Length: 59
Image (cartoon, rainbow, N blue to C red; front, side, top):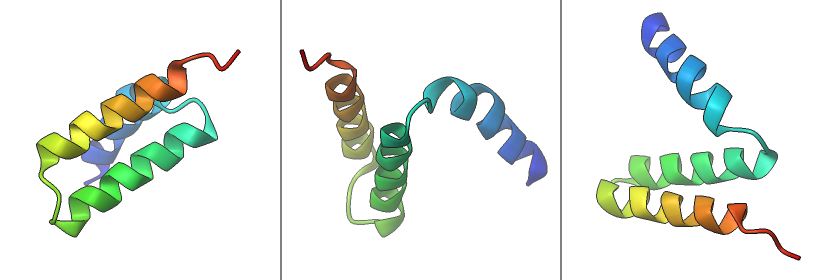
């Protein structure tokens, strides 16, 4: 279990989570996956879309 958590933290968390909104998107995606009512492909597409929208400058 520890090795799996280390593999998640080092390449994914440190490079993919940079702001509090990123944590919100990740937690929302995890919640959708754990609910079992949303297909994983849809969750990935939704998270990718959210990431793109977050990255767009507002001004």
